Image: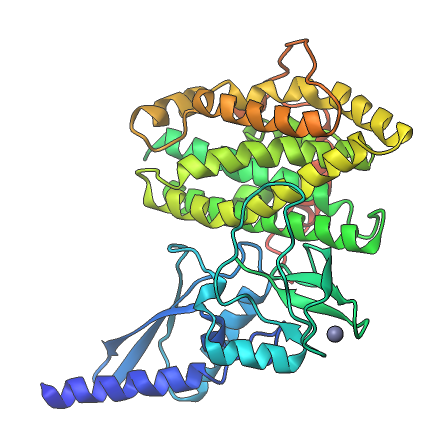
Length: 175
Length: 250
Ligand SMILES: [Zn+2]
C-alpha cells in the first residue's frame, strides 16, 4: 500500500513538472502554473498498470480564447508522456484572481516587458473616474505612468504609457 | 427536470449572447483604436459568460443539447434575452448608454446570484461579476463624458436615452420562471435590485447632467420569447453557418 502511495506521489510530481512546460499562448513567458490556473491534479488507477490524470483548470476571464488551446496543449503533453486516458475539468469557483499568479511569474512578466499585477489586490469597484493605480514602467522602472485604456490587447491587460521613457506598455491588470 | 431552472439559465445566457453579438458589431468600427479594443473585449466577456450559462443549461436539459445547439439552433421565440440587448447599436452614445444600463443591472443581479443555492449559477455569477465591474466603470465614464461633454455629445446622449429608456423596465418585471426560482433562493428577486440600479443610474446621470425620463411605459416580452423585429436579423447572421452546414467546425 505504501509503495502504491509513493508511486502515486511520484506520478503526481511528474505531472506537475510536465504542466510547468505548458505556456499561456498569449503570454508565452508564463506557464499555466505561473498563471495560477491549475487548481488541482488528481490521479486515478486506469486499467491494470496505468494512471489517469484528472486536471482541474479555471479560466482567467470567462471569454478567454486561450483556454481551449491550453486544454489541448495539456492533453498533448500528457499524451506524449505516455498517459492515454486524461480528464481535464473546468472549474469556475472560486473565481481566478491575479493573486494566484506566482512571484516567479510576476518576475517573468516584468522581464518580458509587461507590468505584473500588483502584489496586493487593488480595490476593484465600478466607480467612474477613480484614481488610477500607480503602475511601474517595466522598461525604465519609472512610476510616472498613465493609463491609456482599461482594456488592452487581451482581456487580462490594460494599456499604459510611460511619461519618462515614452514607451507604451501592457499592464496585467488586477482581477 | 427543472424547467424553470433551464429557462432562467437560458434567459441569462441569451441576454449575454445577444449583448455580446451587438458589441462585436463594433469590432473594427470603434471611434478610436483603444475604444474599439475595449468594446471588443467586453463582447468577448459576454460571449464567455453566455458559454458558461449555455453549458450549464445543456447539462440540465440533456437530450443531446450542447452550448452550440442552444446558441445556434433555437429560433426567435425560444430566445429569452432582454429586449434592450437586441435593439440596434445606434451611435456611440446609444451603445455606451445601453452598456451602462445593462451592466449596472448585471452588477446587482450577479452580486445576489453569487449566493444562489444553485452552486453552478453562483459560480458563474461570481466569475462574471469581476468582469461586469470593469464594464460598469468603462460605460459609466462614457455616459458622463458624453453627457457632460460638448453640445453635440450631450444632445446625442439625450436622444439615446429617449430611444432606449422604455426597454429598461423589463429588467425588473419578473417572468414566471424568475418568480418560481425566487421562492427557493435559486434566482434573484429583480424587484429588490431595482432601487439599487435606479440609485446608480441617478448618480451617473446627475454627473452626466441629464435626467431620468418621467414617462414610464415598459416595452417587454423578451423574457418569454416575444421579441422586436431585430432579433431575427441577429440570429440570421449568427446562426447562418450552423444552419447551412450543420455541425461545421473551425
Ligand atoms: Zn518607462
